[in-house]
Amino acid sequence: MNADLSLLLGLVLVHLLGDFALQPRRWVEARYTRKVRSPQLYLHAALHAGLTFAVLGAATLTHSTAGSLSMALGGALAIGSSHALIDLGKAYLPPQRLRWFLLDQALHLLVLLGVWLTWLGDWQPLIAFWQWLFTPPVLGVVVAYLLVTRPLSIVIALVMRRWSAEIDNPGTLIAAGARIGMAERVLVLTLVLLDQLTAIGFLLAAKSVLRFGELRGAQDRKLTEYVLMGTLLSVSTAMVLGLLIRLATTGG
Image (cartoon, rainbow, N blue to C red):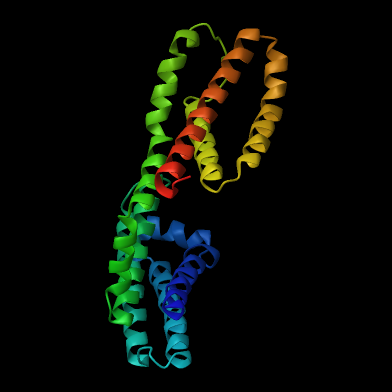
């Protein structure tokens, strides 16, 4: 099983190398401007095919239960051709959009997963993953992470609404406070689930240092109280949620 997982990680590794470390910016720009007529599109796909063949070929030579070199060649061609099609489709979409970038990477990873499962000739790893995913501890953690993002942002905004109108603090980024709060709660929840409660103190201290100059310069007691109240509410809700999940899934 370790060898099988190493093969999957190797495929993901060369994908990241080919898509980011070994892809010049001019290749991406050529794909968006020339699309299907871009030689860089096919050169990029060939690079991925070559990297994939190297990984699968190494697996063939080092593991007696692995597939043949013909399977390695087939897997490399499948990844190379699918990579060209996915990147070509992305070239017709608006650039610099996070949603298309995430979709692009998700499709590439699904192809890698398909090649890996075909190489193994066994769906058991996928079945085992789904069985693990739908266990109460895992579902509880997933629910907790979903709660500390948008739902808790809405709750905290409603709680703080009565004081928001009293704060006049122009010059801040739109919705930046909500995004910072989400990231803060995700970190706090992670630290609680890892039983690293002491680190939460360092997180609060770091945030206090970053906000000190702003609050001191504003000389506004209302703003100081508002920021402090929002921070404590955000951190405390994430901590309580994390502790409840630990109690529910591990019995304390």
